[in-house]
Length: 312
Image (cartoon, rainbow, N blue to C red):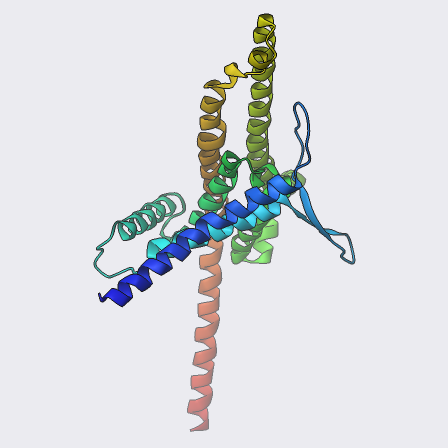
């Protein structure tokens, strides 16, 4: 590699690293500029940065929307960084990391969905990365997109469309007939269960992340008030305002709610996605449809051959 190509590679790496960092810096600046001053505990939804008039209803550009876009840009930058300068024979740590991620996720999808759905590995990786990083954005003081029910509901609807798509591979009649299993009386209950799939996925993910943020805020506020109460006995204004009880415990709670819980909920959402899609695939019905199509195709070809022979 020449000196010019080395410099070019380093410039590209620097731009990709900036692509991962600058979106979050921009989100933090917007947070500082748009968040109004307040006293005491405040638990509210995402800030509304911009309202765009639309025919049916206004389009709100909220903090969760902006942070979601920042997470997507950061994930794309990370992927480009790990695969930049990739070679057939690995000679860099980043390529080894990229290959490790691909290998583990491919094995993960293969074990839970089977070889038929191995192509879902990139999709599952995207779910894991977006969900985990969106939840962990609260570490930077940002509003976590997974604490916004609209964001998580969008993911769940997308997964539900995929589930329905693969269920319909067996034919519309087989799909409608499946609601009557094991006996027709269960038809309405199975329909409700089908509709409840995206709803349950949404509230499970959204509820766990939001509740963690609320609990962390409440505990931090209570510890600050308790510190003020204890130190007020000194009758010193400056000492009384030192929140010494907020040192340590909130950090430990943050490790659970902002890191462990974020990764856990991302794993659960990805696992449910894989199980629902692979479990809803009617393999027997699909094979029967393929056999029927093959039989029809063979019959048409035989008929054409007979007609051609008759003409001769």
